[in-house]
Length: 229
Image 1 (cartoon, rainbow, N blue to C red):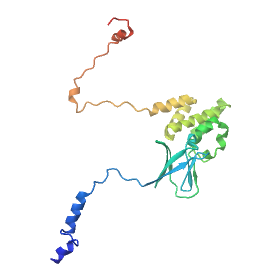
Image 2 (image 1 turned 30 degrees about the vertical axis):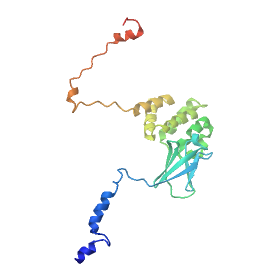
Image 3 (image 1 turned 45 degrees about the vertical axis):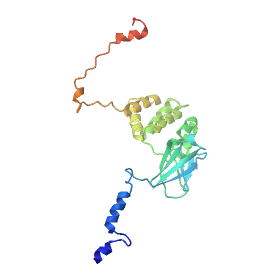
Image 4 (image 1 turned 90 degrees about the vertical axis):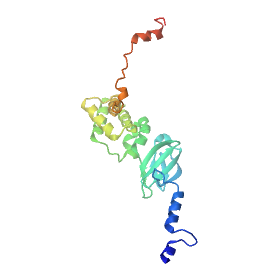
């Protein structure tokens, strides 16, 4: 009797375990996706394309300088959003008064001003594979006036492709003695193309006997008015 009373909640007619089951039945189900802990704030990119958050500065592409952006900070990263576009993502730093440059963000500006390439602060600690230095030397030897700009144009392919993809394309281009930016772009784009997947007939026996007739090209002459309909 005493044990039964101990299991009951004061003023309630049922045991605690029974009340818990009733409460759980009334709860909403948990969401399928996990909840991301984050802090959202607004920031403005300065003239150096840097956005300040929590005493640190994070870079965005130069075309977003002087624009307001949304700062989405999680435990591990800082995302910078303009309108509905993610324009930059950095690993979050818990230190103070640090500046974090992404060299790729400044290549568009340096393409217009290639003379500042070797002195640009955002690029001073940028480590690239040896093939990049070789490509630059060959481009500048081939065209002393525009070689550096051509090299920057190659680097701008990193805006679309990964460092691994572009590095492999440059190494291949150097191997076949082709160093212009258009050829390197063609190589990296071709390698990035995904092969067309075959449509399997497994589990679709009703399609096994379907035959598509070869198109009669002559029938298209009707559209050109050469054959009366």
